[in-house]
Length: 180
Image 1 (cartoon, one colour):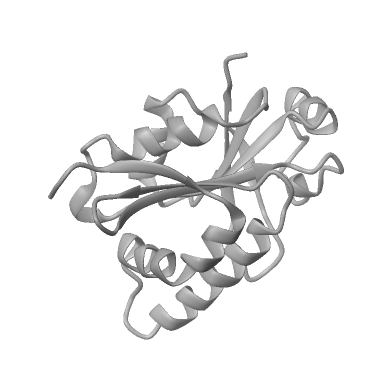
Image 2: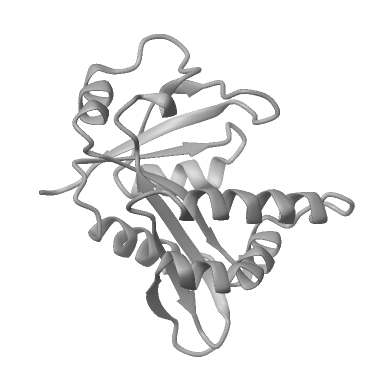
């Protein structure tokens, strides 16, 4: 295992890199047998959809091949990201969304063999350093205890839950103020 280098990819580079990123996704989340293809196809579709959004940003960790990746995009001002929020959307989240000051972290993944080496934190910090946002938001599965623990250690806090349209499962909404 050599040095790990971080680099930003444009949306066009992300498209060219999509197969490698899909491989990384499958390995990072260890798709159960029989679900690997479906999970891979959904990831590629989601990546393409997200990469088409204005302000899309992606950072990859590489040591001769991708070992981690984080990407996100500015949340649209229309509040569509908060549809299905359980209870009232927190005032700060609603106000900053309307002002175009929220950046969604859509994905952060690291290969299991490269975890607990600071790669995820480096990806996180590099991705968020490139935004002009005041607040970052992310969505985590209720069972993703390790990811929730890492987010809390990095200054994130849970602000509620969201029930997106089927087939997507319920998620915790985490936010983190960004230094300005």
